[in-house]
Image (cartoon, rainbow, N blue to C red; front, side):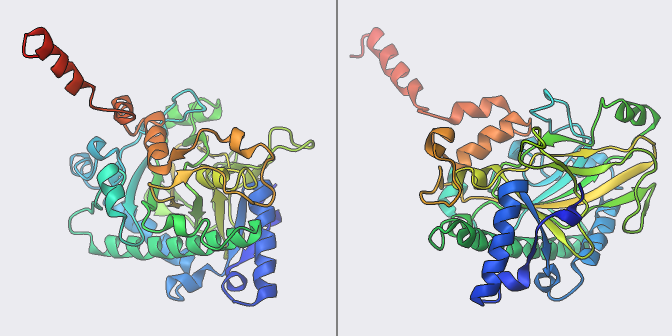
Length: 385
């Protein structure tokens, strides 16, 4: 199955204010997010100040490739483990797939916060998740392009959250308000060029560029990737020879497709893709389903791929639990998604699972002042009672 067969949400309809047009967009969204876990988006250029969103993204990819030519010592100084790789550069073989048993992803990434001023209390509670942005030195064009593209995707995400409220017939603000002042992130990715040995391992299924997973956030926006052969970006529609490589997504299981129908994640001409993350699945009580996806590496050496993803997150002080009254929610949604947890704590746990935060971070959960009582008891024994 290709994305040509997926429901298309026209953003001009979604933002028109016309009841019939908004209803048409909401119907497409409900089908796409409810059955497939994703939709195609038309009309994205308006959010890029009427520039070509695809071209803006391609230009950013070329700028990112130039940044990645810098010495690894410099790149790894931007961000790092102290902030759980949530800003700046992440080297290859750092993030791991949970479903694959911990196999690392063959990608190098750049993460930055996008959106409105973050919540001050959440910043204190989850400083790594709300860390300040990190930019490479002497890369003003890269910084400007990155910021503009990230803002456009974040604004599209806000439209889709409001449209989700209409689609699921819940009060206005049920989703959109919970994403305000949140740690929403834009991520640039370069899936590394394979050598002969890695290409053989890809052919045998031993490695992927990115292991299959579902995103932890509310909505992920995907403007489309680009393949590079050596240093050169290839024209749109070009792919490595041999078995198909790139992004693949898995729809909700059905009788006809009990493991979920596979969808090639190449957007139709002029369209972006939006997919559901775990947070929105939980809030919708399962009416919308998080989209499993993975990135297949080529079976020939010499090719790499650049991509971009924008992750619309819940504000970290939001309780993650099903919102009452969502149309299409599972009858046992409260039990299915129990127990409730703060969105920030959910992100912390997920970052531990995928290897970006250390397992010691879980000690932050729960009561943290047992040492105080131990000190008091030690004084008792020493006769200071």
